[in-house]
Structure formats: C-alpha cells, structure tokens
Amino acid sequence: MKLGILGDIHGNLEALQTVLADAKEEGINQFVSVGDLVGYGPNPKECLEVIRDELKCPCVKGNHDELASQDVSTMSFNPIAAEAITWTRNQLDEDHKKYLRGLPMRRLLGDYELVHATLDMPKSWGYVFDRLAAASSMNYQNTPVCFFGHTHVPMVFVKEGLTRESPVRLERNWSSLELKPGWRYFINVGSIGQPRDGNPKCAYVIFDMEKQVVTIKRLDYDIAAVQYKIRQAGLPEKLATRLEHGK
Ligand code: ZN
Image (cartoon, rainbow, N blue to C red; front, side):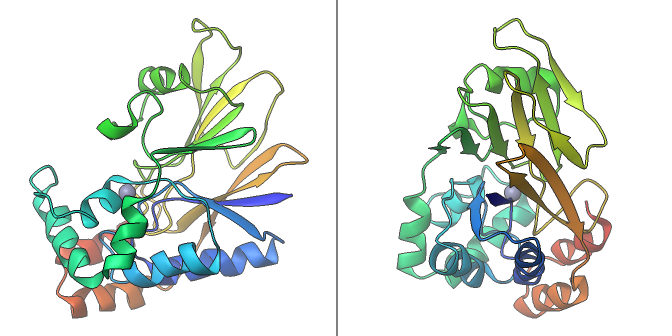
C-alpha cells in the first residue's frame, strides 16, 4: 500500500489539488496529514473540507490549527502570521473550529506515527532543524518511522540503533530512501502550502509500505493564482511574495 503524507497545507488549495492529482497518478488512495491545514493561505475552509470530508484523512494538530480555532491572543505569533490567523478565524465556521480543536497532538497508526512539531514536547511547538533537537524527539519515538512538519523544510533524521545513545544523523539531499529494519526515522515531509527551503515547488511524501521506501516529490503549481487570491483577500503582501521564493 502506498500512503500519501501531507504537510503544512496552510489554506493553499491550488497546491493541495496539484498534490492530490499527482498522488492519483501514483496510485495513492490513502492519506495522512501532519497538521497546519489553515493559516497564511486564502482557502482555509476548502482545504480543511478536503482533508476532513473528501479524504477522511487522519491528521494531527498544528500550531496554526490551534490558534485559528480558539479565541485566544495571537501575541505568540509574529505580526504577519497573527494577521493571517485573525483573518482565518473569520473565514471558519464553528464546525470547522470544532474539528480543528479536536485534532490530537500526536497519532499512532500501526508502525508509524504523526506529530506536527516534536514528540518530546508537542505542545511547545519546537522547531527541529538539527540533530540535537531531532534526538530529543526520537527518544520518545516508539515506531520505526515518525512523520512531522512545522519547519516547512523537508529533512530526514536517521538513528542507527534503538538505544538512547545511538547517534542521530541528518540525511542530506535525499529524494528516495529505503528504510532499514531496526533503524528509526524522523522525517519532515516539507510543506504543500508554503515551502521554506528555497524551492517554491510544493512538497509531499509517499510511503510505500510494502517496499519500505519513502520518496519526496516536488511539484510546480499555479503560484500566481494563489498570490492573486491572497491580495484579493487583503492578507499581508509578504504571504504572496514569499510563495514564489519558497521562503
Ligand atoms: Zn506551518
């Protein structure tokens, strides 16, 4: 079975539809998501409905999902993200917010797990960019693979062994990876809606569970159409320009 893993969609419907069309060609009919369905992008409601109703996709909660579904202060966010959260709150109906509030922080699905930020302190929304942060999370990982998001930068951390002391290394420049039995993998699937690794193409990951191979795909999508919608909605200009730079 081939599984599609969707990360940080952020209300970008054009990118999500591009990914789903590609996944169909790849023969994928089951999806999971590592959260942040909403925030930043101009179609939070539509993206949420695709995940919840169309795909019936198991999902974990992201920090934007949390903030957009509650009436709490946006002080913890930078001004641009906070402005987008306020806008997003006004787009969502109560049933959307209820769905977002009900999402779990982490989700165990057979022999893999999902989390938005880290397994050690999922509610602190820490950013994993290095081996030290990855190792802290992997101490709490009980499955061979855990998929995560939050940084919008695809990365694979590998632990060659199961003890606390086993070293963790960062696998650079990967596009396809064969999982080895007995090793642990902490895999950032990149972002569909707002990539930040300098590559504006949207990202998603395919997990071939029979072959135990994880592959990342990068796809062109209609960035101009999303930028137009962002400007029409009156969202901050930077949210439009950053899409073409992938930053
Ligand atoms: Zn995000």
